[in-house]
Each structure stands twice: as structure tokens, then as C-alpha cells.
Image (cartoon, rainbow, N blue to C red; front, side, top):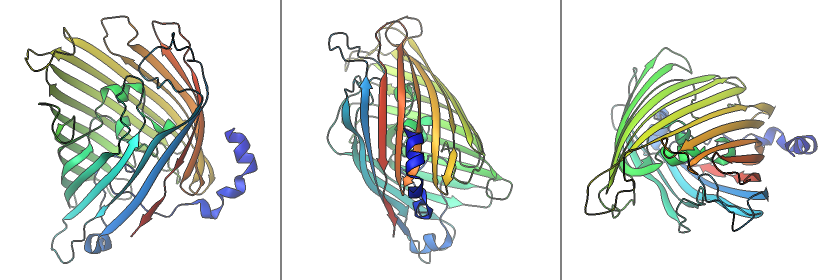
Length: 399
């Protein structure tokens, strides 16, 4: 299908298919790496970036059609043939005008509202419009690096894959390991410090971040919950995208640890990840290990009866076939595994293979993709594969 579109619509990927540089500063459309630095004009006068994001999925074929044999497993949304709204968001981000304030201080912000389909049948469904991002961040750039402090609803700096924007990640979703083992967002505080070595557009950067979060309801009504985490990474270039229209290479190596406490349970996790891109080929790898422990409490029954070890990993390979300027085709294949109790052999052991391609900027800020999803519930024999199409429109403007 992608090849047919390339043959019949190449004229659409002409000069006007390259979006202008309306860069996202933070929030949903930005990768969660080091703090973006404002230009002198942006720092003095401020900058506002308005955007929207719409993702629509079409299920062409799904093996899982028997209501009685329908396995409710990790990574399976039980989508029937037809269309579904995967994400619909709108928001703004930018820099606060500092006017004549001395020094190099800068303040950026991001706020976004929207709704999203549940990742799978085991994820709670919520059809209300929710707050996705809502934070402010102070930063002090120096010649050696940047010191920052952000407060509000924001991404938890833990894994690599869950901190890549849903607008740019292949297949418009993370693997099953990241979705179930890496925290997404929470209300909290993150302190960061980066150190830069070398000159040029792609210096070597070391970034350290620590954070404390309320991971549940943003209003703090889900009971006593806290999440503390820390992440350390080394990067060269843009290590939170899997493709680059200018064919710039990149390397990112990171690791993180977290501790989460909630009524009846504590979770401790460690993570390691890699993103390596050489011009048109990108490799992403990630491993997450968690220990879930019961805690004596009279508030809530523990989620496990004994200490439980969990393991997840993801490996992804993607390419980039330039068409014209910002337009190009990104073929990708990803294998992700999640075991919710390593001591047991059960339906909680899953492995999911995604394969497909996305035409980025087929029209300005419009992506079109198609792929095959193979789900292997390792201890069941129920066929559960899907053929899927996806479309994304992401208009934006800079004020």
C-alpha cells in the first residue's frame, strides 16, 4: 500500500510538503530530553506554539473475533474491523517573555488537553477530556550546561521509549513493556542538570534528572501514592526521535531507577536503554526489571500476595527513505515482551511484534501508515493478529 501511494502521489510530496520550523518546546509533541534553549528573541519577547494532534486507526482485519475465546491480554485492545480514534489532543507550549530581566534565565511551559483510547482491554477506559500536560519550567543555561526545575503535570523521566512523543514514535504507540512497566505522567517536580562537552551542533551531553511525583489522580484523591525516580543519560544529537530528515546520526545511552509506593504495594524498577542512529537506520533497545512487594495496610488489599518479579524488553529497528525534504517513508519493526510474574508460566507472558511503514509528511503535517501486529501469548494458542492502518494530522502554528 505504501509503495502504491509513493508511485501515484509523489507530486504531493513537493516543495510545499515541508513544514515550517514551528518547534515544540515541551509537552506532548516534544521528546523528553534536555531543556530546549530559547533564542535571544524568544527569551525577550516570548514565543507561543499552538498545536493539535489527531490519530485515527483503521482495523482492516483481526483474528480475535470469537467472543467466547476472546483472550483479555496485555497489548490487545480487542479492536474489531472498523475505525477508532486513538488520540485527539490540542495544546500550547512556548517561552514566557523575560523582557529586560538580566541574566540568562528562561521559563517555558506546556499545557495540553485531550483523550486517548485505552492501550488494551486491561487498561481503564476514560472517554472524558483529560489534562495531558500542564507544567512550567525554569532553566538557567550556561556555557557548560543547563540547570532546570519543572513543576506540574509532566512526563516521568524514566525510560527511553515512553519519553518519545506519540507524534513521532513508530506505530503511534510504545511497546507492551514500556506501556505496562514505565510510568507515563504524573504531577510532580523534576530537577535536572546537563553538562555539554565539545562544540558544534551535536556536542556530547550528560543529563541527570531526579523527580518526585503523585502518579495517580492529578488532584491527589487516589490515596497516599508517591513515586521517586532518577535518570542519567549520555547523548549525541537528537536521541528522542527514530528518524531525521537531514540524515543526522545520533547516539543515546541511558539508565534509570524508581520507587513507587501505594496502598498495599511498593514497586521498585531499574531500566537501561539505547538509541543509535546512523543516517537512515535507527536501533532502539530497552530492558526494564521490576519487583512488586506487598505491604501490610488496613487501607487496601495488596495487589500481590508475595514478592513478584517482572521483566520487559523492547528491540526496534527503523529506517528512513527520503522522498523530498521533510517527506519520507519510515519502515520499522519492533519486538516487545512483558512477563508480569517471572516465576510463573501464565497468560501474563506476552510478546508482540509490530511491522509496517509510515509515510511522514505525505502532505504537510500529515502521516499515513500501515502495519501488521502479531501477538504471541506465550502459553496460549489463540490466534490474535491484526492488520492496521493509521493516519495522523498535527497542525500547528507559532505566534
